Length: 331
Ligand code: PBG
Image (cartoon, rainbow, N blue to C red; front, side, top):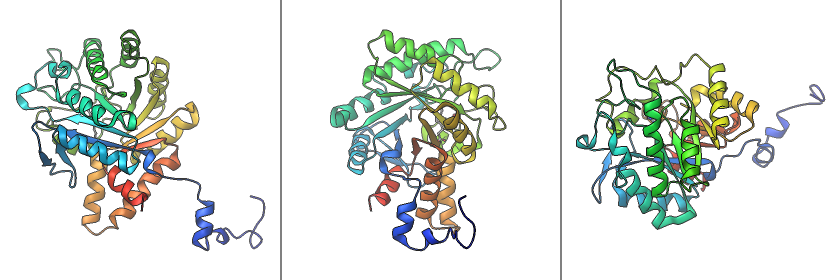
């Protein structure tokens, strides 16, 4: 502080719009957004997700249309999640390794249509493919086993990279998976495929609508607390992030978003690497519910929250509001 009242009046620079624009410290643009999309079977299909008002599952043709829309809006990357038919789910999630699964077909179709105009980020974890809804393989007691799961995740990641995925995003929280995936990518001629690690992923109450969207909500028994993090812990998040960076992650993610801004801030200050936030399904649904209940204007609510991620140090945000936010930002 260089001065004191009345020589210093901080309201001076806030007094008019031109001056507020000039002094704005944080900028949110469409290039900060990653748009998560849900893929389903068929063609010409759009299935609204009841718990995510305004979000639909799209068949591959619709996903390609969304990808083109993203390019036109200036959104640099989309994230894909499959709604796997119940008949294709199994205890071991083998559909994740099918080179012709929904994720691979959608990835190829987007890359054919848009090339390098957009990045395709694919999620690595088994929950959209398992009959039990857990992210990995279970032993007889129902515990999610680590090392055998990692072996399958490596094959899943290679399957996605072979289909043309630009960014592999392991969301499973197994120990050691980033190193294993990085080595496999190196050995299989994918040196430029990025890894965005879901490093600090918490066992959260905010994931419910997502589980509806991918069809694992009704299947999941119990919780994911033996692998996802305890919301009480932030030091542990720094250890997770340090490990994933050492293992070969290009960028790291904190998930959910707004309730974990302290973790985002600490990660950015400490590691000086690209940090992304996932504003998850429950956060989206709460904005929509709040707006519907008349708590506040929806657009103002969502833009304030997205800006907060940038201010906390994020390079970008995964948000189901990406297309809408980009339209608002593009005026
Ligand atoms: C699963 C996965 C989840 C999300 C992304 N990948 C859910 C979970 O861990 O149960 C949540 C995304 C959201 O809620 O929007 N590996």
